[in-house]
Image: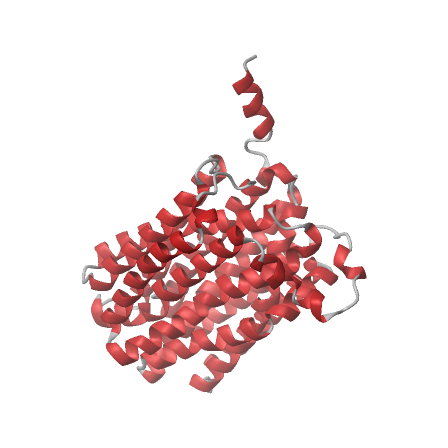
Length: 415
């Protein structure tokens, strides 16, 4: 047996076994159900608030309402995730999200759901997701053997992308029967996610659970990332790419006013990035990235920016769908690299706090990016706002290659 064969078998002894681990399979289902519900709700809320106000500014405010609790609670969230049962935290959050969706359904059915209530419930949902996200991320390494973590991260990304395809499409189709139908469905999916998480089994008490609550402990996640240039560079690169290149908040305007479609068209536009990302996620789950991961990450974010520029100026529905598919495929490459770097290079007792900071940088950047897009669209117009974002993303890639040469030179996820 040759040395190269020995190395291959040592590096990859369980080539397709990640999804066969029952706890991870249940986690996969929970993640899919929760994100599908969130995506469906996003389509309905976006279309409904734009129908009520006709304002890009209010579309941006929905993103801001979800961003604020995630940003304000980040440090508390991380400490909670490292001190308490992460499964229990996720279940509670998914229950709160289910009840919030139920309120949207009741308000829509009763006819009293106005723009103010939509923003309030978006804030409540954002607060719940602030706790859910880091807890779910920190669970992954405890569900599979360490050697399978990169594949588990890719499968977790696949759950996100499946939800990103089905959620918006289902939300757009079900909206034809009224927003109440969408919100009832999302409420049931959030509650189902909590059931799946409960069935993953008991979790060992987190190591940080014995730590006294101190200011240094709460800020430990920020300190950890700040002293590791590779992780800091990867997280901040994704932050600015999503912040500048995120045109999701403006899709209702593109669907209705530029591409001239209805809610079904909005659903397809929201789903298109997920199609590309899902295909890439399955590819990465079967063939994990092993070499030149730093260069690949920078290239992927550059493609993300270029696709955003093409989408900005497109007036063809099919072309817009196509570039959004490419955008999603490029985005998931950087997501998988970043997530694997964070999970593999963070000690178990720190994963909650580090994941919370990661969520603040990445998760909240989606909502803050929506607010930024809505605000710039109100100031400069819709097409210039998206165009500026795409150009800004490419400029960030070039600048980050100089600021974080360690990330550019990173060869493997473990190094």
